[in-house]
Image (cartoon, rainbow, N blue to C red; front, side):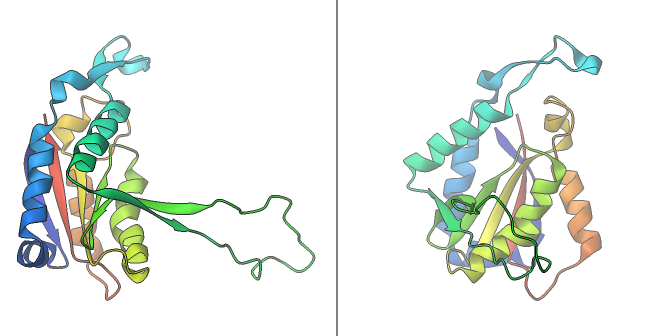
Length: 189
């Protein structure tokens, strides 16, 4: 695979290149090591492309996990302890919140990486919420979001988010004090 687009959010490109040049190189090498052609394994059941062979996001994620793992990147989980202090008086939930957590796909030396081949909301959540949470928890100080460019996403199931969407949103949203320096990498086969 190739990196087809790069967007710097909150000075992310400069920040990461200055502090983590070797890790950034590892990320690029990992992307380049993914053989996209091996992941055209999903037969579409959707009306608009029934029977068409598509890229399989689950298989792609599994390959990224394996390749990042070989380079020493590890997933990090943060347990969630939900407060009961916000329920309405007299309301008592039946289900316990045990075992709830947030997870970052890959972390190494305070650099976080998320690979997203899912729905649009997850892509924005990763950069605008999850990276901030993991920074506040002391696990990262910057992040990289890896997403398909539109041309690649069009060869997956409908609804897969893509690079051009998040770039537009981040440009029009602007930056906030709580945001984490990040690089958005748009990848293609």
